[in-house]
Amino acid sequence: MNWEFHFRNFDTQAQWFGVYHEGCGGAPWHTGRPRCWDCTITNNPTGGDNSVYVPAGFVVDFEQWFKVILDGIEEVGDILMVVASEGEDVDAWKDAVSTAFNISTDAVTAALTNSNTDLATLMANSQNAFERSAASINRTTDEILQIGAEMGLSGFGFIAGPTYQGMIFTDNDTYNDNAGWTMLRSDPNGSVDHILNHAFIDQGHLVIYWNSQDSSGFWNSFS
Image (cartoon, rainbow, N blue to C red; front, side):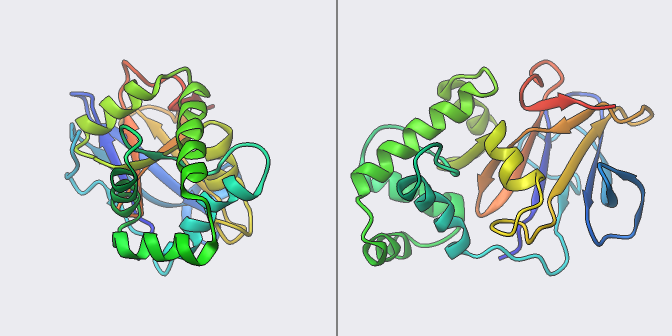
């Protein structure tokens, strides 16, 4: 399963987005990384407009994603992946995991059984982490759920702030093979002015939200 990057533009004006990653050959460089891909994207809250970047040969499998969730049980501190689902129903939570990571609910059940993980604890940690991740960018979970719904997502993961920076942007050997990802935004004819600070997780892919009226926290200033 390829780890795709899906850009969603809520503005009526087109926006430029660029993806930078070690080992690519594009220019210019930013944050010490060369450009892999860039695109000017028109209004597309629910996708489309050639707004998806698929890295060549970069694969993230379910075991890697699931380890991210289990780390929240095994370590004191923040869970590293959150699953946004409403309510405390076990089946609803498993469905959300299934949708977020594009695997069957049977696979989720089997992984839980094989890991000897307490599901009630995992669900509680997941909800707490969702709240912390939203709060890290001064948002409520209801606001994140609403944005996800406006993008056509249901049962998604969400990471932001320090969790996003540690997992996606910063080089590490746990999640990105010591080659982190830089994602930037600008007006089509302007200089780069924002760097990504969040990601929604849907079908195992990263979905990126841009709204100039609601960018604070989701994106940080960049120069």
